[in-house]
Image 1: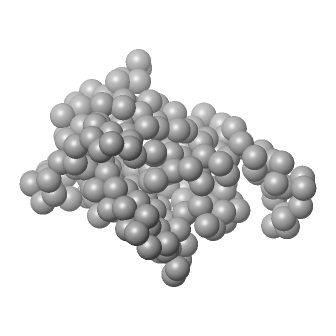
Image 2: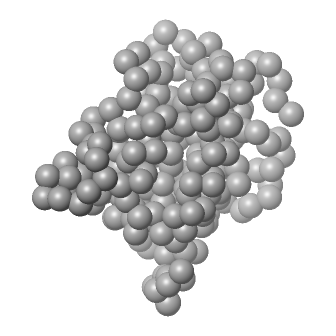
Image 3: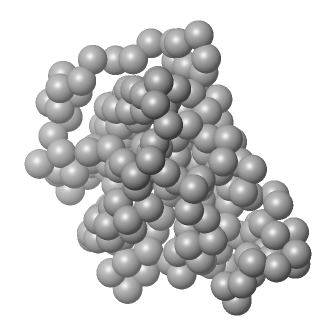
Length: 215
C-alpha cells in the first residue's frame, strides 16, 4: 500500500522478490522510451530524465527516446509519401526496439490524444514486444491512463509488464532542480519494473528467433 508521501508502484515493494534480476546478455536489450505528452508546460520531461537515469544504470539496456512533442504526426490516417516522410524519424526507432517504456500523464481519466495518435500510426512495430508503463498525475497517479493503455497494447499484440511506476502529485515529488525528494521507493519500484521488462524482452526476442510471431 502506498503511503501519502511515497511515489511508487501500485504494488508493494515486496514484489521485488517475485522475479529474479536479469543480468546483461550478449546482445543488449534495445529500449525505446516514449514520452507521451505534448502539452505546453508539461511535467513529463522531468520524470523522463529520472527514468533515463534508471534505465542507463540497469544492466543490458540501450535506450532511445521518442517524444511526441517533437513529432510532426499526420492527423489524417492515410499512408501517403507525405505521412511516411513525417514518420521517418519515429518508425525506425520503434521497429528497432526490443521493448518499450511509455511515460504517460492522465488527462480526463485517460492518456493523451497525441500518444494515441502515435500508437495508432504503427502496428507491426509493437507486435510481440513488452511494454512498461510509467504514469503520473494527481491523486490517481495516472493509473487510469496506464490501465487504458494495457487494453490498447493488448490489441496490438504487445505484452505489458505487470508492475508500473506511478507518481501521485508528481510536481510535489521533485524539487526545483528536477531531483526526487524521496528517491528510495521510486528507485526500487523502477528496478522491479525494469527487471520484468528485461526478462520479457529477452524471452520474446529469443522466442521470435526460433519461430517468427504469427499472431
